[in-house]
Length: 546
Ligand code: NOJ
Image (cartoon, rainbow, N blue to C red):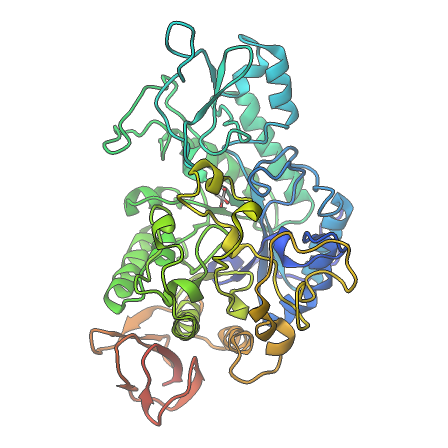
């Protein structure tokens, strides 16, 4: 395997420090073969679009063989591609073609669990209680006279008990869906396997890995009951100290390649000091900033979050990341258009369907884009955010696929609403997502109103979300400020965020109810909405030349 083939990306720069990373959710990005499900051929055909958008890297959500019980996060084989998406050869070709366009690639690695169709789990089920094959997972006898009660009181993150019983009477642990049995990371075979999987993808040229649910892989081996409202410390499965040893070993694998490979953690943790431990110099390079993603559209809260982020990252010399959306959360246009603009998984069910002013949400999402792209560090851009898509909230229950919907008995609608196939062109579904005359319909229905949001309609249209993102990404590359330069706050009203980056760039975001006067400047570089002379309207952001 020649990983240098077609690779024009620079080899020395610590690219993850300032990159704009675009998240491709393969099922919903573009469908090349017309079956209604996105695939690698579709992605390959749209690489020029991503290149023109100006992204530095693509993160591919899981593309491995999977029964899709959790949209691919139930991996049956980490070293191949699901036939619905394509082949391994196509993935290799895609990586090389992205590199030829100077776009780096990141794959998603899911270490906490695998699919219940993974050969290891099939073997464990067949081998029976007490077998070595079961040692790779968390199998236990149940409690109660006939073992009819789960081994402990742990609850699945997707709702319901975290244990499922097999016909032979034993139970197995799954922190997520029953189709996602948790691996036992105390077993050296699990560690060896994943280090080998990392090598497999690094040798195919990928520039980084995104680590799914990074803090939950280690478990308290006593599997004791606990009260989730008052969990003991250490927690039985969240953020246990043992995980750091695992990721230090992964870092050694990443560092064994001449071209630097980035480890990116999905780390949802409330305690900044515990979060920062994952970013120690011998562990992960960066981690997603979920505080920013969940933060309300409120200047005080955002400023507090930005300051706290920078303070957390500075001592470990890790780059901050700025994330507004991903495949698990409500799209920004809908969220920012609601009365309650914060996001949390716990409140998703409650907020679902609450009125949203999409025009207001769009204005704020545009301003939020300029805010996040002006902050020091790297930025994650979830597919479709650059088109200003809203959350699709009226998906018929019968079509919902997220296991969260079923496991919470509909109390939480789940995440399908942000996973609807993208609209590329045309006047009606499938909006160019699938080729003309395709046999299959998009796997989730697209709103008719997306005719006004297709990439085709927005291409070259002044004032479109797509053109705003293109202009911002272009400028971000050109300017000396965005990237690593230090952020300095300017003195402003409480409801206005204003800061400089380097000597010559400033960003001002107006979250107050009325217009605000711009600080002294030499010119306007880019604005998320129309300026009124020297006044910046409400819910608008601007980049200024100082
Ligand atoms: C986090 C992923 O982002 C989410 O989509 C998935 O369901 C869980 N981890 C379980 O793998």
